[in-house]
Amino acid sequence: MKTFNRVLLRYLIFAFPLVLGLVIWGGFVDLADLSLSSGFIHTLWDIGGINLMVWVCSLLYLIAAMTVSENMRNDMLARIAGIKERDERESLIAGTASRSVFLLTTSILILLLFLSLITVKIGKKPADAVAPGEKRGYISLGLQFSTTQTQRKDEPSGRDQVFFDYKGIPISNSGLLLFLLLCQIGFYHYSARRSPLLK
Image (tube, rainbow, N blue to C red; front, side):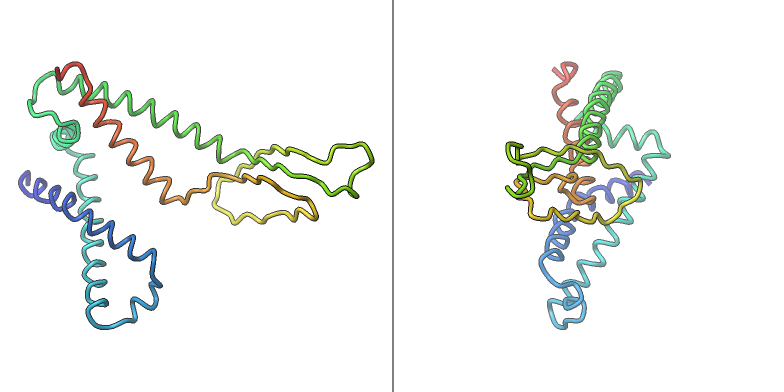
């Protein structure tokens, strides 16, 4: 089983560029037309799709195995951190790196929560819409909170000249999750490799 897990881990690492390439390819073409195409392109797309499904299933299996098996979890953390010797220093390094990652991700999540709640609008009212002597420019600050993903309806600004209109983080859900995942893995590796216990 240990050998199988090691082979599966290497497959996940070496097949990741193919998965990433498939995702990028799918973002630049019409998926309906691509699925109905024929010839070499269609065969290549099918092979990439099968590889993607196998890769995702393998990843889910390894995550479940790491959750259940403490030995595999420790081995994976040691590989990510670049630790070759297995001794008491490994637990100290992993604990310190995990604490640093927890603090970093908590800070990022708090910042992202704040950025997703606030709304900012900077604009200028037309001259005939205000009384003489009143300021035409305005800054509008607001809060928005929703537990579900809903399509926002932009409020009509009338004849107002809007210079800046911020209504949440301009990143997709998948992009945001990928960013957090890369931050976790990257900072864990960085914290573990910079640990004074490795020197």
